[in-house]
Length: 226
Image (cartoon, rainbow, N blue to C red; front, side, top):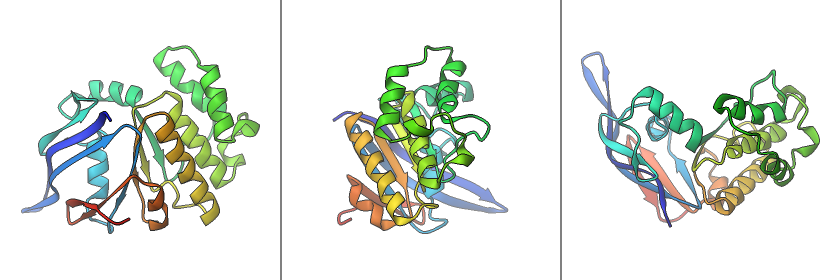
């Protein structure tokens, strides 16, 4: 298996008044293709810091992040933005859909930004797999929570990123829809050889993960029993 994204000796410190807060202590982490990785931990434990550094939204204090074996965290803002656009997909709790665009228009927006051809075949395949074909011309506010999240997964997968970050993707869903969304995410991660890192408070979702890591007080450790 190929490593798609990794942290090497990463730390993150914040200055709070006269005090230095060690938000993330020395961290080594790697996600391989085909892996859905669960990240758990109490509020304020460092999960958000971990995710934002991994996604290139914050710079580590020490250490580095590699994306597909290439330096990522040390790049400038413009370079990181370009690489994120091409290689990273985000699925957020709020589904991160643009309210004034239809589901199909959300997908095509990527092609407009990158001045690339619309991949209609892949889009149709995603719509079919994720069961969103019937409302591709609807706006987000016309859809249920589960439909929005399935659409967000389609949007996150459309540009064929190597890595997907899912931050509490089931928090606003009922049990049935939560299981539905994570099962789909696990399947697409495996089938498309992505690496997906999912932060969740719902430990029922961990059964679909290949690995589970727990962050407590800035220290990350792998759980041996999910």
